[in-house]
Image (tube, rainbow, N blue to C red; front, side, top):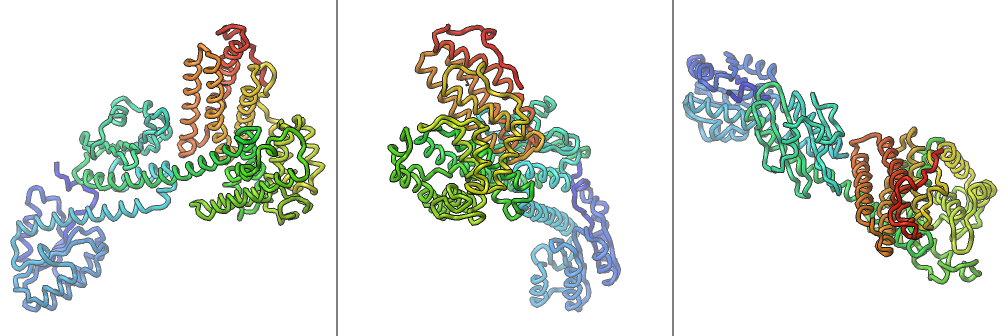
Length: 637
Ligand code: FEO
C-alpha cells in the first residue's frame, strides 16, 4: 500500500531550472517506485514558476535548480517564490551547480532555506528523499497547527457533546472517519456505562444511546479495557482510546471506505493527546459548576437543619422562584439584561435564610410568638446572611451568583410599601430577585407547618398574597406567582391523598415532596424550560439522598427484615435518576421528561404504595411483609 496515494495533502512538486538538470529529477519522481505519486510541475521561466505557485495553492514543495553564476538572482527568485506560496510551511529546495557564497547562504537561511534545503550540486536520489520527507513533515506541522486551533476553540469546549460533535467533524474534514465516526464516553456515575456522545455518517442516529446498542463487534472495541494509543484495527477502521489525566475515558471509532494510511495514524496520534487535555478542561468546568452548586446546597442545608423543615423549604423556594422568574421573563417584565438572574435565581435563593445560623435556638425554634426583642434579634438574620454571602462573593470564582444570593438574603424581608427590614427599601428599589423570593418564601411558610402555627390552606395563602399585593409584595411578582400556581393546579398529574400515606409523618412529608416534583416535571413537559427542569432534578437528587437516608435509618432502628432489599431498590432508583440527570446536563438528551415521569410514576406505584407500605405495616405491627395486593393504589387525577 502506498501511503502517499491517499494522504489528505497534495504531493505536487514545482520544479524549476535548466532542462538538462531537471530531467533526471523529474525522471526520479516519475519512475522512483514509491515516489511515483508525486506530481511534477516543471516550469521553464521565472514568470511561469510564479504563475504556477500562485495558481496551485496546494503545492507540496518547490525545487529550484540553479546553474547561473549570478547568485543574487537566485536569492531574489527564491524570495519571490516564498512570497507567493499560499502556505509558509511549504518547503523550498535550492540546488546550485554554482558554489554558494557565505552571503548568499545567509540570505537563503533568512528565507528558511538551509541544511538539506540548500545544497551545492544535485544528488537526485537524496534530493527526492529529502523532498518527500519535508512534505510529510510539513503535513504533520499543518496537522499540529489545525489540532491546536481545534483545541483552543471555545465552541468546542462549551460542553462535552459539542466537543464530541466537533471532534468527529474535524477528523472527517481531515480525511479520517469519512464514512462514520463514534465518540463514546464512559459515564462516570455510580453505574458507569459507555454512552455515544456523538455519531457521524452512518452512526449519526446513535447519539445519546448506550454503547450496548452498537453492533457487537464495535461494542467490543468500545468497551475494551485497553487504554493504548491509536490503533489501526484494519484497513478501513480506527479505534482511538484515551484516559485523561482526570481519569475520564473516551473511545473514538472511525471508519471509511478508502483504506486508512500511516498518515492517519500520525494525525490521530497528535489529535488523541490534545483531545485528552480538552476533555479534562470541559469536565473540570462542569465539575466546578456542579461543585459550587453542591457547596451552596450544603450551606443551605446546614442552616436549614437548625430550622423546622429540613431541606424542603429552600428546595421548594428554589424551584418555584425559577418558575416565577421565567413567567416574568416570558411576559417581558424581566429584561434581557437580567438573563443572569434567570440562570442563577434558583441556586441563589436557597441561601436566603443562611443568616439564621446566627440566631439562638431559643428564638429560632420557639414554640410560640416572638416578643419585641426576640423579633429584633430574629430580623438580624437578613443583614447577617448578607454579610456572610458578601464575604464569600469577594473570594468566590462565581461572584455573580454569590452577589445575587447576598442581595436576596438582605432584602427578602423588605416590603413593597417600604415598611420592611433591614433597609426600609420600597418598590423597585428592592432588588427584583428579593421581591420574587419574598413572595415565594412567604407563601411556602404559610402553607407549611411551623412550631408557632398550623399550616394555612393554599387558598388562604393565595388570598393573603393577593391582599398584600402592592403592600407587602410587588404586584407583578404576585401576578406571576398566581399564574404559576394556577398552571400547577390545572396540570396536576397525581395528587397526594390519604391512601398514599404510609402512616409515618416525616416519611409522608417527604413523599408529598416527591409528588410536587413529579407534578412540576409534568407541568414543565410542554414548556421544556431547561432551568426549571434542572432545579427539579436537583431537588430530586436531594430527595434521593435525604429521604432514603431517613427511611433507611428508621428501618435499621426498627430492625426491619426487608431492609437490604429495600435499600437496594433505593440505590437502583437513585442510579437511574442520576444517569438521566447526567445525560440531560451534558446535553445528550434534550428531552428526558417522558422517561423521568415514567420512572417516578412507577416508583410511586411500585415502591411507595407497596414497598414503603410493607415497612409501615411492619412498624405498626400489622405483619412483616404483607402481599403487594394489600396495598391500595390511589387513583391519579
Ligand atoms: Fe419512601 Fe422507600 O422510599
